[in-house]
Amino acid sequence: MNLIIKDIKVLILKKNIKNIYLSILPPDGKVRVSAPKNVSEDFIKSFVFSKYKLIKKNIEKIKHQEIKTKVVL
Image 1 (cartoon, helix red, strand yellow):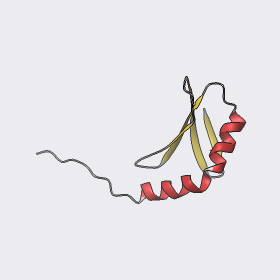
Image 2: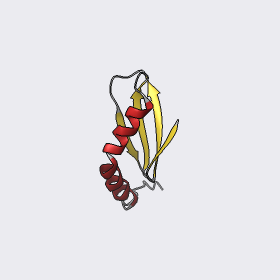
Image 3: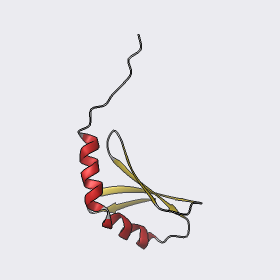
């Protein structure tokens, strides 16, 4: 399930877990939230909204990060 909070697209994964996990994935800063199956969509929205500044800061940090790749010859 996808969700858009302000200008951030968030992928929501419902799993058999106990806590909510927020991930910002390199290289392009995709945002993923893993949540327990019994948590409502409204709660997830408020959770992401409360972390908005942190998410934006880390997306910018990831986008400006140098990508390190291994070159094997």
